[in-house]
Amino acid sequence: METLIQQLINGLALGSIYALIALGYTMVYGVLRLINFAHGDVYMLGTFAGYYTALRFGFSEAAPSFVRAALLLLVAMVVCAVAGLTIERLAYRPVRQASRLTALITAIGVSLFLENVGQIIFGANPKFFPQVLPPQQFPVYGAVVITTPDLAILGASLILTIGLHRLVHHTAFGRAMRAIAHDLDTAKLMGIDTNRVIALTFAIGSALAAAAGVLVALRYPKFDPLIGVTTGLKAFIAAVLGGIGNVSGAVLGGVIIGLAETMATGYLPATLNPYKDAVAFAILVAVLLVRPTGILGTTAPEKV
Image (cartoon, rainbow, N blue to C red; front, side):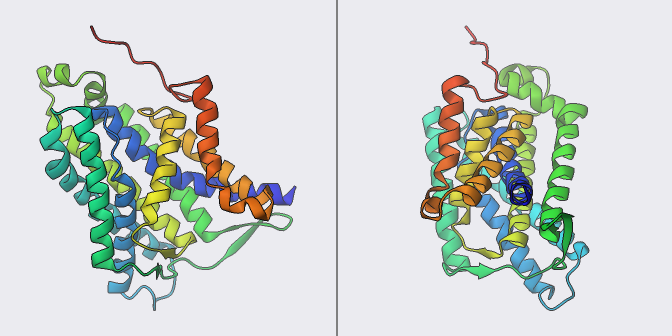
């Protein structure tokens, strides 16, 4: 029983990371019908932004605290929001009227560009994130504990997810975003500045990926310029599993993938642990066979 509860805590923490990244995928797809394959690499940029900020301000020598961790989180989110704006303006906006295949190839090109430039600038060798949170454990049940990184991940993810939900459903910007997702051309006719809304959507999604990058580094401090490849792919699977284009679906998909991966690690034989990443794909295939639009996805009406 204790092992199950511990794995549930670990799975929720990991699933929260996948959910934050999946939200970026689902937001961009919602407004542009574009799979932003560079999103996982923006997550990588967020980790490096937090890392170099910590080194610049001497956080590795200072006493760990939640305030310093929050500062790293904010700096990384701002840096990646600017990166998201830049990527949208230079790479995606020029091909917005082109075919979907052109936009897809562009997204793959941006991803490869960020990965290779990251290896040139940051170096290919792994780095280790400094300890900026107090190394504490809090008892939950019997031998079950929850660590400060887990609390930071769960708390920050909950706050950011609630904030995004309110932004999308209770603000003028959110109404404009949903209008563009419904019909881009009609939104233009209604006077909505579509370029501005789309650019800010990229910025918000990139900021969420940056937050995930810093949060996961607090728990798993080893990272390199290619960390966004596998994690980004799993987050994309989470977005599709929940119903891509649906904010709640992205969160649900992220939690399901996180829990499934953690349970596989905890209960599969040691000889099968190298194949735990296949669990996410197996779940995706199983769900799509029953619900091709994802768990919370809906079939869009065809325009004729």
